Amino acid sequence: MSATRPAAEAAGEGGPDRRSGAGRAVALLVLTALGALIPLLGPAAALHGTGEAAAPGVGGIGLLRAVLFAALSVPLGELFVRGLAGRVPGAPAGRPRSWAPPAAGAGFVAALALASVVSAGDLIPHGLGQIDVGGLYGSRDGKLALLEVNGFLLAGFCALSRRPAAQAWPLAAVVVAEALRAHPATEHGPLTGAALTLVHLTCAALWTGGLPYALRTLGQWRGDPAGAALLGRYARVALVLLAVITATGVCSSLRRMPAATILDQLTTTAYGRTLLAKVVLVAVVAVLALWARIRLRRAPDPLAASAPARGEVIALGLVVAVSGLLTALPLPIRWT
Picture 1 (cartoon, rainbow, N blue to C red):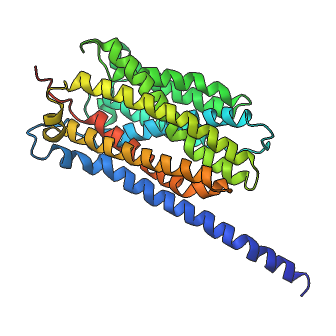
Picture 2 (picture 1 turned 135 degrees about the vertical axis):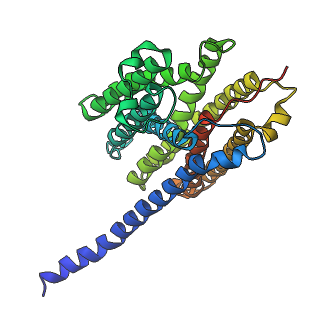
Picture 3 (picture 1 turned 180 degrees about the horizontal axis):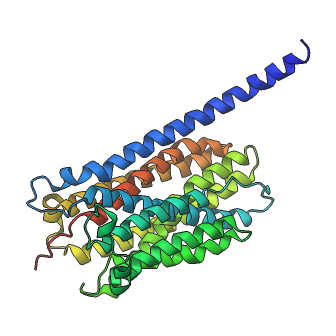
C-alpha cells in the first residue's frame, strides 16, 4: 500500500497538468478550425453585392495562403524571441520546444499545393495530368512558387539540424518570393510594391510568431524575474513593429485604392471589405497589446499580462486568416 500511494499521488499531481495541456490542445484545434472558416466562407460574404467575380477555388487558395503565412511566422518569431531572450541578463538556459519543424512541413505542403495551381494555369487541378511541373520553370510565377517550396523544404532541414538559426536564410527567400509574387511585373511600380510587402510581411511574421513563443518562454521561466524582462523587451519591439506594419499597410492600400476612392471601395469591393475587417482586427490587437503592457507594468507577476496577451495571440491568428483571404480576392478597380 505504501508503494502504491506515492504512485497515486504522483498521478494525481500530474493529472491536472495533463488535463490542462489537453484542454489547451483542444482549444487550439477549435480555434484553428474556426480560423480556417474565414478564408473558406469569407469570399461569398465579401463578394456579395459587389458585382465582382472571383477565380475558381478562391476559398481554398486563401486557406493555403493563410497556412503559408502562419508557417513563416512561427519559425521567424521563434528566432526573434530567442535572440531577445539571449540578451536578458541572468536568463534561464531552458527554452520551449521549437515548433519550427512542423511549421516548415505545413508551409511546404501549402507552397506545393499553390505551385500545383500555378502549373495548371492558375486553376485548381483535378488530376495529376493537369499539373505541368516543367512549365513552372517557364514563368515568373512558377519560378517564385518553386522558390517557396524549396525554401520551406530547406528551412525544415535547418530546423532539425544543429544550427537551427540557419533557417532564417531560406525563410527570408520565401518572404522575398511572396513579396515579388504579390506584385507582378505588369503592375505600376512593382519594385516599390514588393519592397512595401517585404517589410510588411517580415514585421507581421515577427510579431505574430514572436508573441506565442514569448508566452511559452514566460511559462517555462515561471517565477523568474527574467520573464518580465523578456516580455518587456518584446513589448517595446512589438510597438515598433506595429508602427511599421501600419505605415506599410497604409502605403500599400493607397497604391491599390487611391485616397479619393478608398472610402467607397472599402465598402463596395470584396478587397476593400476584407481589408476593413483586417484593419479592425489589427486595432483590436493593438488594444490588447496596450492592455497587456499596462498590466505588465503594474502587476508584480508578469503572468498577470498573459490573459490579454493570449487574447492578442487569438486576434493575430484571425489577422493571418483574413490576410490569406485578402491575397486571394480580386484586386479593386483603380479608379482615376
